[in-house]
Length: 574
Image (cartoon, rainbow, N blue to C red):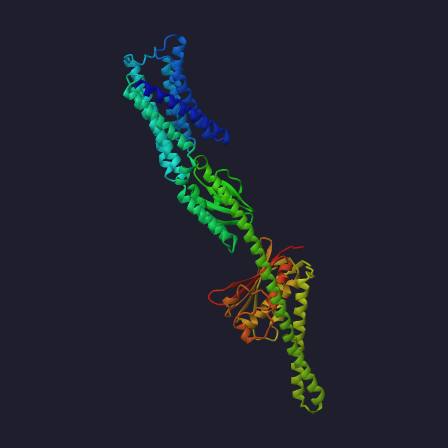
C-alpha cells in the first residue's frame, strides 16, 4: 500500500506540473483572460503538489509550520482561480463574486490563524475538523459552480467545444471528490489515500484532455461538423450565379462549426446574406463592434455571433472558419468577375439590340412619311390640274400632316443624339409654374376635345429650366391625351428643395408587363400600341431630360384605374 500510494502521489504531481506547463504555453500563445486564469490555477496546483511532497510529515519548527500554512492557503485558492476561469466567459452575479472571494479570503485567514496543524496520524482536534469541513465545503461549492456552468453551456456548442467544456466540468468535480477523500483519510497510506490519489490523477488527466485533446479525439468529436464543412466547401466549388447565393451557402456551416447564434456575410455595398441576427447588430459589426468574430473573405467579411466560450474551447474551429472565409472570398471574387462579365455581355447585347431596333425603326418610320410625301408630291405634279379643289386641299392637308410627323421624328432622333452625347445645357431660371403649366396644357390640348386641368398653388415660383419642363410635361400630357382617358390633370408642388410635377389620367394605365421597361427606348405601353402610331421614344427622351436636370421621372399606377407620371426636379439647380 505504501509503495502504491507513493507512486500515485508522484504521478499526480507529474500530471499537475504537465498541466501547469500546458496552461502556461496556451497563455503565451493566446493572451486571453481565460488562459491567464487557467495558468494561474494549474501553476498554483502544481506548486502546492510539489511543495507538499517536500514538507515533513510532522511539521515542527517555524519554517515547516509556515510552509504548511502557505501550502493550505495555495490549495484553498485553486478552486477560486478555477472559478474565475469558468466565470470569465460569462460573468456571474455580483453577489456570487463577493461570496466566492470572501470565502477563499476567510479560509486563508483561518488557515493562518490555526494554532497548529496536526500530523497525518495524529487525532484531529474539533477546531481542525471544523476547519476541514469549511475547507472542503469551499472547494465543493466553487467546483460545483464551475462544473455546472461549463456542463450546461457546453450543450449549446458544437461537438469539440462541448466535449472539452464537459470534460473540464468532470475534471473539476473529480478534484473536489479527491480533496474530500484526502480530508476524510486517517493516515497517509490507507485505502482512502490510495483512492484519493487515483481520483486526483483521473481529474488531472481529464483536465489534460480538455486543454489539449489529441488529434484522434478531436476527429471523433468533430465528425458532424466536418461533414457540414466538407459540404460547404463542395457547395462553394460549384458555380453560383450571384454573390448573395455564395454567401447564403456559407451561413449554415459557419453557424454549425462554432455553435453560433447567427452569422452574416458583409460587403462594402451591403449585406450579402444574414441568419439569426438583427439589422442593428449588423450595423454595429460594420462599425467595428468587437463582440462578433470577423473572418476576412476577400472583398467581404464573414461575421459570426458566437458565445464567449468559443474562442477558447473552439480555437481550432475558429481556424476552420478562417479557412472557410478564405474560400468564400475566392468564390465571391470569382462570382463577381462572372457577374461583371455577364453584365458586360448583357449590356453589349442590349446595345446591339438597341442599335438594331433604332436603325430598323428609323428606316421604317422615315420610310413611311417619305414614301407618302413622295406619292402626294407626284400626284400633285402629274394630276394637279385635273384634280378638284377639295381633292387638292385633302392632299395638301395630308402632306402637311406627314411632313409634321417627319419633322417630329427627326427632332426626336436629334434629341436622342444630343442626350447620348451629354450635349444638353441646363439653364435654370425663376419660373412661375402655374402660368407656365397653363401654357403647356393649352398648346398640348390645342385642337383636341380634351380638357386639361392644372392644379398649382398660387405664385409657385421655382428655379428650373423652363425648356426642359416644357419638353417633359408636353410629352406626358400628349401621352395622357392619346393613350389615357379624361380628365387629364397637372399638379405641382414644391417640397424639401425639389419641385414635383405630376400628370395623371383615368385611362387603362400601362400594361404591367412593360412597367419595368417603360422608360426604355422603343417601349410602347400595352393597348396603346394597337391604337395610336408612335415610335416608343417619347418617355425615354423625357426621362433623359429629367436626368440631365439632376431630376427623375417615375410612373405610379393609380387605383382603381389610371396612370400617374411624376417629374421631380431640384428647385435651384445650377
